[in-house]
Amino acid sequence: MARTATIKNKHALNKSNQAKEKKERHRAPTGVVKIKDQKGTPPSKAPKTASGLVDLLRKRNKKKTYTAKELNLPELNKITPIGVVKPKGKKKGKVFVDDKESMSTILAMVQAEKEGQIESKIMKARQLEEVREARKIEAEKKEAERKAQLEDAKDSLRKKRKRKTKDTEDEGDSLKQISMGGTKPCKLKKRVAFA
Image (cartoon, rainbow, N blue to C red; front, side, top):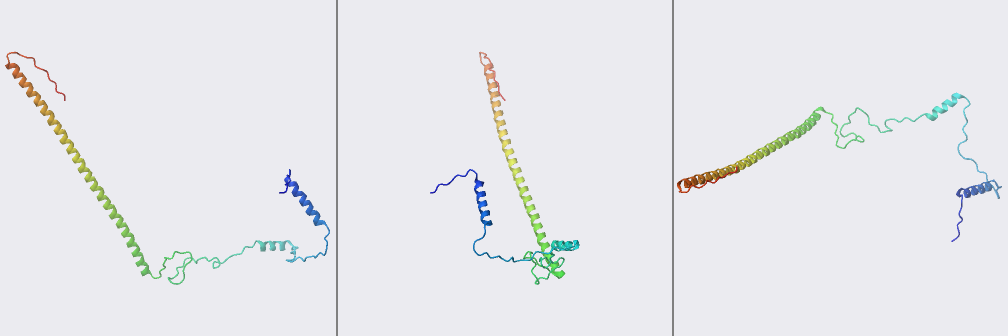
């Protein structure tokens, strides 16, 4: 590998190369030199008057105008018959109808479809309403069953309490009779029933 010289000023090398190239250009050519003919348009002659200058500027600034056919623009406000021309950029399914009767039949068919869709929406809404009402009725039945079960449980608890209080009263009465009937009077025990 050859050594590479480090350059402190990287632009200095380019300047020296440019200077060498200039010197080579200015040297006298060696050998036979051919003069090339300049091909192309001759230099334009500038108009001498101001009006000619204005005309020249108008010609330069004049923009080309395109016709509708060149731009492929569709003609407006016209209905093309069915099989005549495929309109550019239109959907494939479009159909243009000339006679009013067929147009009215097509319109009637479309309206019938729309009404059918609306009717189906109304039917769906009715069905949903029926389902909601059925769910409400089921929920009310379940609530009534729960309440009935709760009332049954409460009643059974109340009956148990009543039985306990009756038993304690009976025991109290029998104790009184025994205590009164016996020779030795004994003290009555106080009993407390918690609610």
